[in-house]
Image 1 (cartoon, rainbow over the protein chains, first blue to last red):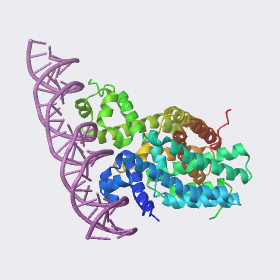
Image 2 (cartoon, helix red, strand yellow):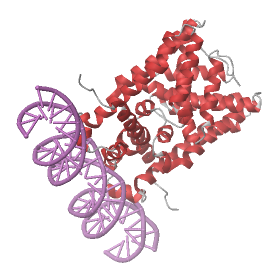
Image 3 (tube, helix red, strand yellow):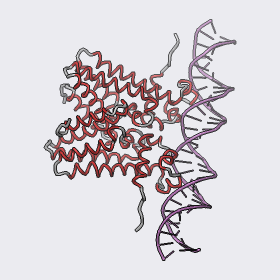
Length: 189
Length: 189
DNA sequence: GACTCATTGTACCGATCGGTACAATGTCGG
DNA sequence: CCGACATTGTACCGATCGGTACAATGAGTC
């Protein structure tokens, strides 16, 4: 059997970090090459579509991680509150308690959004939808659940921005603590 | 008396729009020149420090607008709730109900933060502080007011991200409506 | 060893990057 | 009209951009 994409996951993780730190325009092939240890020859071998394909693959990779670690628990947990708890844990883990920034959120802000509009809309849309479903199953009325879900996802994005602006990780952890209460989870001190 | 900076305000507004749409790295001098109708000669005459000085001036310009139209009402209104109402109105107006994105928030996310860290921290810090003061004057306990203010500013930033990701302006207006209720303002339907 | 194909390094492309130099204008007060 | 100075257009700089071409190398199969 043929080996498929040797450690493509790891590679995408490294490239994601470059995009996260420098943005789409700022992430030059030189920086990506330096971070990954690969020359242009290799990069264009793995991503014939160049920078745009790299970014698209990185978004898909992140989307997959959230699908497995955040959306799936929301969807599949028998106890919806347990699923929400897992969502918050996964979120805190992914963003390293505020040290990391949301690449997809950053892409949504500037012109690079036009290139990945579909993927970006899909990512956030599924997050909100799955959270709203879980909230509805946990007892909220459907309309209320939708609003609350949208509010929660926005709160996470905003907290990431604010935490980075203030250079204060506590901003993010405070936001998660408020969310836990607001979403009906037992307050843990 | 010497005329100082003929229509510098207007100029900064145009440049701000370029940075907003393309990000710091993506906003090339060619784009800025095209948008303003100025050649490099003129641009470097007004901003000898080049792109970095332009971005710094743009941030200061935005900061000044918020100082006058958002922070001042929060600080000076006799009725704190009226000040908060003005804050929300100014915010909705500035971001054009979600059509516009927060340039300072976008700068906070990628590496350009390092260049303007002080200005960025100051902008968000003052927003949160002044809102927290107004909330405290409107009856909230100090600690609670601080958390609520932080939550509100983060909610605005997150809503801008989400609105742009979903390409749906209603996301932003819904967030403002929720905020109005959450901050103790009479719900207007 | 020979064939295949994945992987890599290097040289190179034209375009554009941010920035500088400077001469040519415009626009004043005197 | 004159000098002073603000403003502008243009040409140019070295560096870097994203992308291409291609020969060399690696590893596996037969």
